[in-house]
Image (tube, rainbow, N blue to C red; front, top):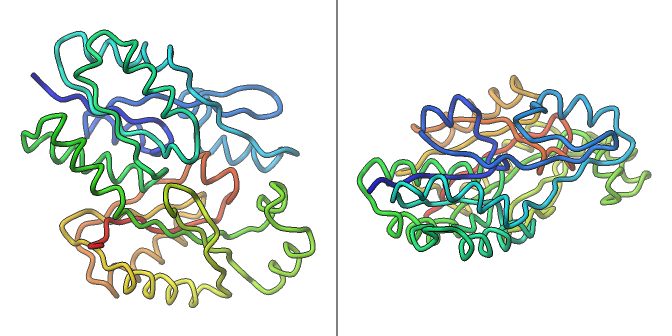
Length: 281
């Protein structure tokens, strides 16, 4: 009996990574004013940010219904395999509840293990990578799910928003705050707290961004047994410089990166970058 790993497209794993890791993906949908697009299928991340720049209304992600989940689960279960599904935080979407309903609907659902990641984007992707590592080491579906449910509370994610345009469009800050913040070079700081993306502060200038990150790592020390993930939205060079400084300052040995997708990108826009890792506490 093999263990199949499934995630959704909010984990922001690329098609190449999915093939390398042998992971299956359920693609979410993104709603723009001109229609509905399947994330990673008929809209790439580059196209997402291009359309977002032209949009007058912020895009939204749609909830996956139980039948769609059931149709995804059953082909993976029909050969007798176990399936571990690592999904976006239930605090951000109702899709996890749909997955729970689908588990009861699906043939072979007793071999399906659902993991509420309490994360999204590179934090969720980090848990997928851990599931793959455990699968490849011979762990069962139940063992993987139990380990992830403990580990998810130790995932730390912090990111820095480079433009205030989309926070203003979404009504999260006022127009005057956006203008003043842009003039002063202020970057809002967001983190995942109890499964939700929350504003946790602001910094002024790129040097302060690195200082904030190092302080964050000191407060929540990294568990060096696991990979550290960096992420960005259309600002690869900026993220690479940030990553290199973090790696050097903290002695990080195992790291990777992905581009942030629709869930974070809707509110951050381009120019956002940050880090996710598994902490010791």
